[in-house]
Image 1 (cartoon, helix red, strand yellow):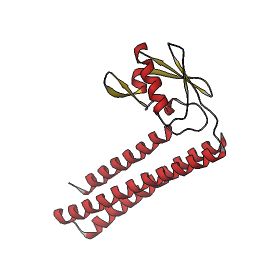
Image 2: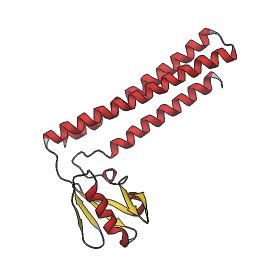
Image 3: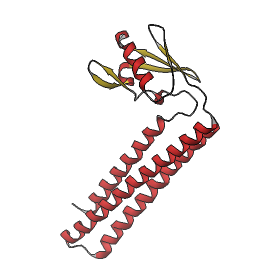
Image 4: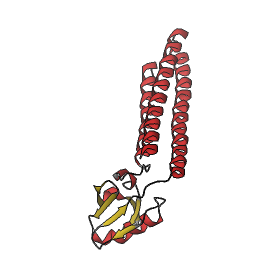
Length: 186
């Protein structure tokens, strides 16, 4: 494997870690209704846990309300059960065809706890990127020795990996700061 291949692989893995964090942010409650709050909720239908977005249409008719319309009316009770047992803290109202979820406002204390959880999650994403850098540096050292390349080439490749890490850490921090601001404002 060449040095460029190691760097490309590293960038792809860091992008994956960043996108996992981005998806995690979608599920955080901000006091406003968003489909991201419930779309990844697992519902036990037909004997297997399935993401809600695969078995129902999710819409936002009002800023504080989520409307869930199952594709199969028979799964309505299963969806309602999954919402009640989740950690969303919302009570579904079922009219036989659709489920309505009213998103309650959050107290200052709840907001603080959510921001603390957000910061921990952002730090976990950064640690993941640092671990990817560590693996990349090991790969670069091995590749440099195996191919008989100069130390300078190895150092340049290591610097590229370090720059990738900095870029992704800044990106993750910006996403976290933006979401924290959103949580504290609403």
